[in-house]
Image (tube, rainbow, N blue to C red; front, side, top):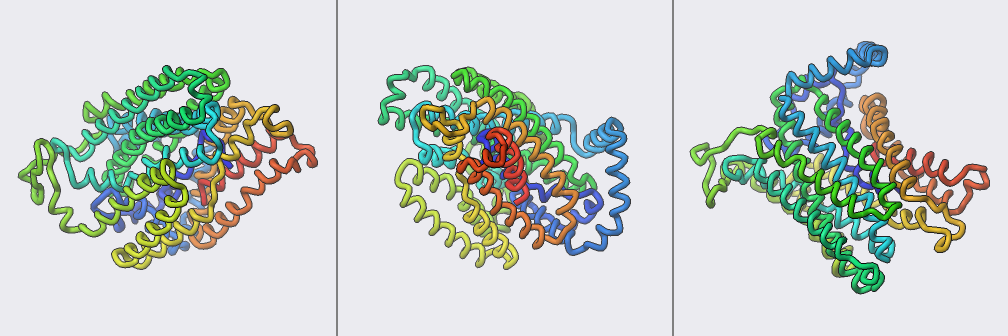
Length: 495
């Protein structure tokens, strides 16, 4: 179980691209033409590095010396880091990336996941339904492959990213404004009626979905831009990814710090107004072109005009038609399946999901190299076996004494703010440990260790639910921090 403040956000962060600079020169030999493959390229690069363990051993002493200097001279290290970062990336793009990750990824997305538990709980929504709502709320992140393909193939007014980003921001603003209006007109009597509460909660989920559309789309567009620059300048290493993650971490810490106390006070409208302000922050930088890109024209090779202001990159599509189609359809499948499962029938949704997974595995086997097929199947098996009960356990941990006399009775300030901030810091430590110790190991033993740790992690929740921690003389809050907020967050980000 994880706190809602970081639930599923930590799984969005892939530590594998955080490779050490000593290998950065080899990045130039691996990489595609389209940014939608950036995560896959990072994994392949890491595997390639793991086959060169002797190179890692040779540079071990120099790496230790570098880390020793950074620890002893943090100010000098930070100055060198930002000077190095700015030599490859413009200050406008870095500012845009910082705003996007602080306000969107670490702000709006963390806020939505934090506030959904107390909000739906107040409306009388049961834990199983809230779990489905969380899946639907997070499904825009599964749309990222589709958005990546769409932005590559359909420049709007000559720009691949700018106007898609602006439309995404508009969608989030509409969703948040509707959310504020719905909550403002919500009466306690209407919330207490089961039928009215469930109909209203369906609308709230759609609003949350729209807000996460902004976060997810801006994220994939930013990834596409810095992946493009990294392919041109492989010597830049992983500095920009570290910068992105630090901004997201800082945003989530700030978000967690106020969501818990405001939730305990019942001030949901203040939280939603803050979210509206966060959604507005990337609008001006995006409009002014801080996410810089070369304008495409109809006269460019392979470019075709399909309607007013919209072009189609027919040349790129013809070169990689099948991969484009497979990636786009796989991205669209998740939100559609989430909608069926949430709003129609759970049984039908599960059945269709299994069929779609089999189809995806079959198509991957037919279209992509065998190594990609094996990776996809392995990821499917890992994700299926990693059962998430965050919504259900959230109800248990925050239940009051009248509902659960012998429960932990955590306040939202503790459950969201305290545990959430601790979890965010642990995420950063986990990435650093992964890069320091696991990135130089062979992939198979490292993966086996993390999977084994992931299987042990739920035991922490079992001990707390069974109240065995009292036998050990450990209070609920201390054990929760040591177990769910630290150990499970570490496992979730490295598994």
